[in-house]
Length: 370
Ligand code: MG
Image (cartoon, rainbow, N blue to C red; front, top):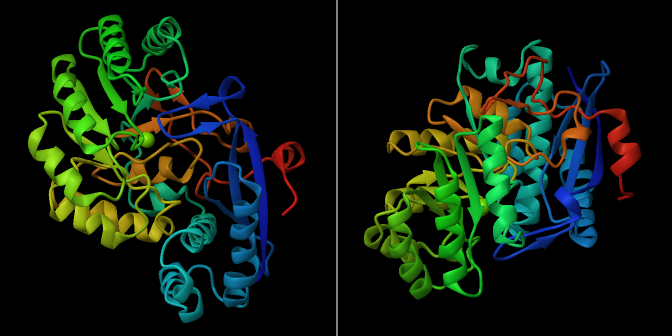
């Protein structure tokens, strides 16, 4: 089994209702720069990362895939994925320009495609190749009803709609200019949720330390499961101080790039819920290391977005630290087997591979020239 070609692709897919906003971002489209790796026997592995559909940086990722990493893969056996990961991650001229950032997103797409090939070759869904159990119960939590630009009435309606659909956990965005607006909305959604439902909040790093302390303390009265990214995602001492001062647990990790970064946050007890993202970490290989690290410290792993990053469904299905996975259904139309939630739980994926296989129509409909 030898790799014959490495071809990048780029999708720009519209988000819910034509646009969303949180405390730090406003988006109309989601970007998925990715790669299709084809073997000499004609098998195709697919992997992709996630972006804000910003064409210049998406093209830079595609260029790294095709011209920096691609030549290192030609002729290699994709089943040797961990060895390949080491060779690519430590290739001196690439590592010299970035052990994080664009190079890492490109490597993530490649590593996911290699695991997709390995699982296809084994004729198993990736979760089974990784040792997961068929009867795993993986709860979904919804984020797509909780955007910061929705007015209060819509926010409450969306939360009620999700719980009517069977969700037992929802997340809403905070980080408004006025903290009073955030607190008012948290209170309104908490009152609308049935008894026992979980409510999380996500500030997307939009607060400074003082604001995070002020709002975080007041959130304690609304039984919030976690506060996500209260301050800048890489502010380690700031998160240590918040984790000590607040009674509500801290969640973060969707913007951490490396095992080293997670090691430091976990060792310092600056995070309670570890949101490792396989397409910002460099793929399945590095994600599994971080999930094991969190698990060894007794911390749950809740991957960032299970639909836009389909591989997370397989990883969360297989790893013992995962019982909960985010759901934001922006890219359902792109995949042969999209992540599906029924009665608040993910449906078990059945097709061999990592869940990343694209429908032909996806490239015709949402493909952008790289
Ligand atoms: Mg988040």
